[in-house]
Length: 512
Image (cartoon, rainbow, N blue to C red):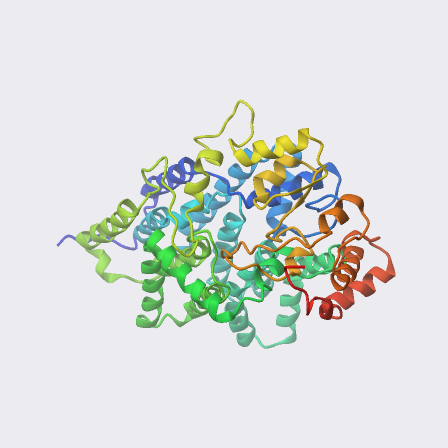
C-alpha cells in the first residue's frame, strides 16, 4: 500500500479543512438566551449604571467577567451587541483552531484530521458562537497547551502559564480545573521561590477581579453560583442527573465520548506522560460536571474537554496513518459521525429540537428560529422572539417590577427601567439563597417568591411577611444597595460570607 509522509511540512492544503470549519460555524451561528443575561449587564454598564443586571442593585448575574469586558469594549464602538458577539466568537474560535493547526499538531495530516473532528462535533460547533464565553476559553486552552509544550527553560515560562490560566479563570472560574494539574507539575519541576512568585504574579488578573467582586458585589462568586450550586438538593439526586447529562450529551453528540476516550487511551498506551496533566484536568472537570448534575444545554460542558482531547490526539504519533488507506479510514469515520448524528451541523439548516427526558436539550435548535444568523430579522435588528415582544409590552406599559423566568432576551429587551424578578434566582440575590421548589430542571431551579417581596421591590420598604426572612433581606440589601465605601457595609459583607446570618433561613419554608 502506498505510504504518505506524515511529517511533511506542506501545510498549504490545510486551508480546505479550515475553510470548511469556518463555513460550518458561520452557517450555524446563533445566540443562546443565557448570553443575553450578560448582554443586559453590558448594556447597563455602557449606559453608566455600573456592572448591574437590575440597575437598582449590585448583583453579579454573569459567570464570565473577562468575556463581558471584551464584549463591552467592542459594543462601545459598534453600538450593537448581536453581530458584535457573533463576529468576536467566530474570530476567537477560528484563531484557536488555526493556532492548533499550525503550531500544536504533530503533522499537517493530523492537523487536518483534527480540524475535521472539531467541525464534526455539534457541541464544539454550537458553542463556537452562542454568545457565551466558550470561544475565549478555546483560545486560552490552545495558548496554554502551546506554552506548556514549548521550551520550559525559557524565561517567564511559569508566569505565562499562570497568566493564561488566570485569564481562563477570570473568563469562567470552573475552567481552572483544566489547568491546575499542569501548574502543579511545573511547580514540582521548579520548586523555588521564583516559581511561586511568577505563579502569583500571573494570577493577578483573577485575584484582582475577586477582590473587586468582594467589594463591589459583596461576594467572591457570581450570584448564579449560589442559585445553581447551593440548592439543598441531595448529592445522590444531582449525581443521577449528572449521569443523565452524560447520557443525553452522548445521544446528542456521540463523537465527543469517542474522541475523549481515545485520547485517554492513547496517552497511557504511548506513555506520553508529559500530556498526563491534561488528562487529569479533563477528568477533574468532567467529575465536577457529574457532581453538579451537568446542565440543560446538551454538550456544552464537553466542548472544552473535546478540544483538549483533539489536541492530544493530534500531537500523538500514528505510524499506521502513514498508509493512505488508513488516513482515508480515519477521515471516513469522522465524516460518518458528523453526517449520521441527528441534526448534523454539516448540512442541516432548520433543526428539530432534541429534548432528553432529564431536561437536557439542544439549546441551539430551540432558539434557531429566534437568534440564528440565517433567521435574524435585520429590518428591526432584534431577535424574532416572543419573549422580546412581551418585554417590549411591559416596557410600553411603564411597569416597574415584573416577574419572568426566562430572563435572557426578555431582560435585555425590557431595558434598564424595569426591575425583572427572576424566580430561578440567577439574577436575584434573595431568591438564589432560598430553598428550591420540587419539579426542578437542572440549571433552572425555581424558587417561590416570598409574600411581600414584590411589594418590597415596588415600594422600597421592607414588607416581607416572614420576620426572619425580612431581617435576612435587610442585611443582604445593605450589601447590594448600600454605599460602596461605607465601613458598616464591609462588616456585613464579612458576616454574610462567614455564615453569620444563615440561621435566619434555617426554618424558612417556600410556603411562607
